[in-house]
Image 1: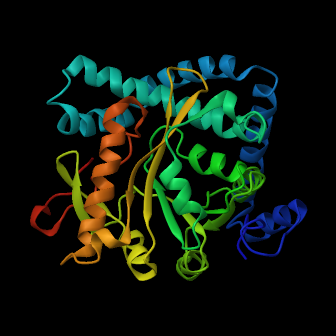
Image 2 (image 1 turned 45 degrees about the vertical axis):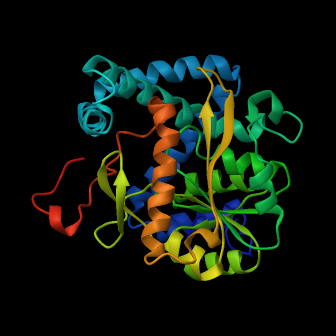
Length: 336
């Protein structure tokens, strides 16, 4: 069991044991010290913002997002380079820059405030104050049925709030989590997520566990818009080919599991979110397709694009979504 996995496996390690393991397994004493200092900074930050209303913290984080915009020209340029071919036919340059700046503000609010404060604010009693559910009758039928379900969302809006809210409502969900480099912060975030009722699987080496979740009638949650490298399935995303992981479609096909594409979009600038389901892809839709894996990928990629187009300022344009290119486009490495 790796560092920071105390809530992921069946055995619960104490926080002290996680700390000891972090010290033993760090590649150097300097790295171990950095782990402890980073963790201390996160806990101090969480304590400080806990003394203020979330709306005050969100206003502060918006300004920090603007500072991020000005201090990280490489991130700013990447966001604009991604936006121009994606939405350049709908928005002029001034509007594209406004969308990009809005993305920096939004994700500063998400990472610095909302991920820290959500477990305390969103409870079984208080969630309607912050979250408005769209028409989820059909998704609930699928989630409550005895078969397994795959639920996916892009790096859009508050991509953790969808699963968090459903878990608070009592639905058994298992989420795939990419482990952080700092095992102490990783453990802290795992603990806060697990408190909501989410079961967590670390991303590396989860194939068998993921298959068991779906095979046992559970719901598996993915953030599904990460670049999958040259061996991924290439599908159109904002008019350009992007690489998508095969595992989602293959798991759905193997287990005849429907795929739910959902999202939580910020309403204006505060901590208010609308939760919607954009698309349910059911097994009978791909059963007779000649290339079902490609078709499934095309369908959920298109559904995610529709979500993002409604609120483009809430998408993570600064990440390298189009990094990998299909074979017929490969040349010098792209920077977007």
